[in-house]
Length: 330
Image (cartoon, rainbow, N blue to C red; front, side, top):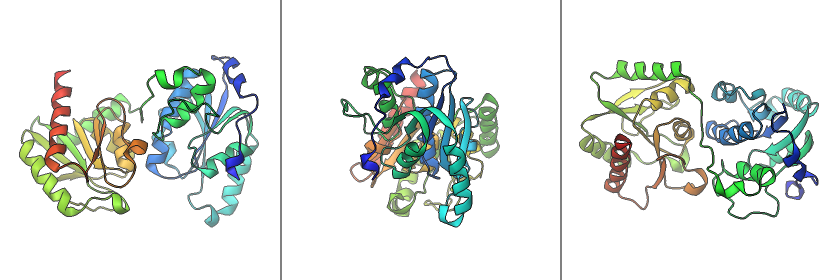
């Protein structure tokens, strides 16, 4: 059904919208996962760049966006639908109805592959609705965070889609948050060594084996004797290196991001925490062995995806070395 949804017939009118007006924009991405919500931040940044006085409304599941987007002044309203709609059908319908009663200048799908995202755009009272880039798919990116930005640019300014850099993920940490992260690391380690963060957990087949991680950790310690190695622990409180390293746990995502921000590099498998790291200014290495790295890799700056099933651990260590020495030289 959603495959039949088409962009508004008058979608090209988007170019004539006053750039300095307080236009209202709806982004739909009813999903509760940390990574999927962070992957909306490039689109939010792009809309705010195109319309500096815009008011953005979001449809998501759960409460994470209140935390992740707390420093985005352009985000006015978040419709946080229940994580499990059928367990709270009345609450789901109430929030859906309050959304439908709003009027918007633009409604845009946050993920082209999400049927629910498309349905909410269809139900919205928006003058202009964007589901995809239309027939013009020249140089369309593969990355899931870049696609909705590309779709918007194709109608705002057709030449921008492939010629301008895409905004990277950003959690917009404040100066105070960054300073707190520095204090947290200093409380864990003595001395002035720089810190490397690792995150050994991931869901399902994305999680690398203990055997792999223990070997990787051993080589990491051998090659980076002048660095602290800090393991960020997941909610599950598990460790693929059996808690051999100094570790840090917090249920505050912004606090975790502030710790990563004060590290020189983050290394972890494809997960929400990998995307959280990618939303900081710290170089992020994403370890991929199952999912499509071109779709979910940490991009921007010196961030990089690494395929663990085709690269030796020694080769991965070399890449990390090159990145750290590069950052020290600039």
